[in-house]
Length: 251
Image 1 (cartoon, rainbow, N blue to C red):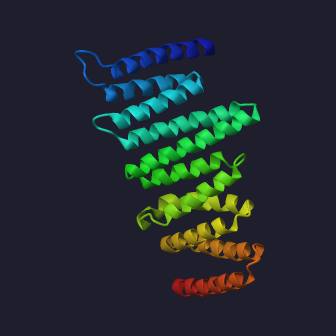
Image 2: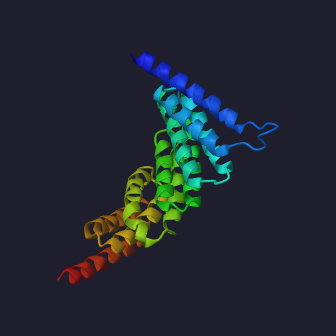
Image 3: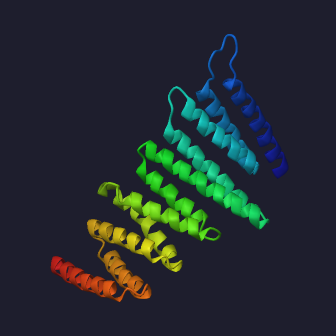
């Protein structure tokens, strides 16, 4: 039954792919490619390939859909971003299924890069929450096999978060909190301190007293583990002052 389902989806995908390629062709009476139609058909093909677990074909079709939409008369970076994100997901699923270690690493790199392309397109479309989400996903793809790349991505994510409007903080704070644990585990103290400073600022803005206390304590610990005793003492003093301030505000 499953084989019949997959075979049917592949047949449908091939038909959609044929329509997409036809939409891109020009002729004596059709002077320009119909990129919008091509994008729709590539998207339909990608969805069906994905359902049939033909991940390489699905990934390719998602990328063609994204690129066609960016070339269309009414280009949509947001539409393209969603399909770069889907293509990244296909590459990640391929990586999970791949047994050869070298091939797995290539797929991890590809999935992370595609997710960052999705982030760039979401940023271009003004959707910074989705952009930061994609940075977080890209880093997580690399946790187990590309720690150095994960740390660089979290560092870039922190820099971007520092420039977002405080109105978006509630939507983004979980991404920062999740990153802190991994970064500390990798003993990347510079990135950890940057993320902790960001989390502290956002916790203050949101009035999250418990989260603020946890961040201040974690900052002291990170400085101590990093051998920065003087900075640890400064952070401890700041923590005590913050606790006293919070206590006064709660009276």
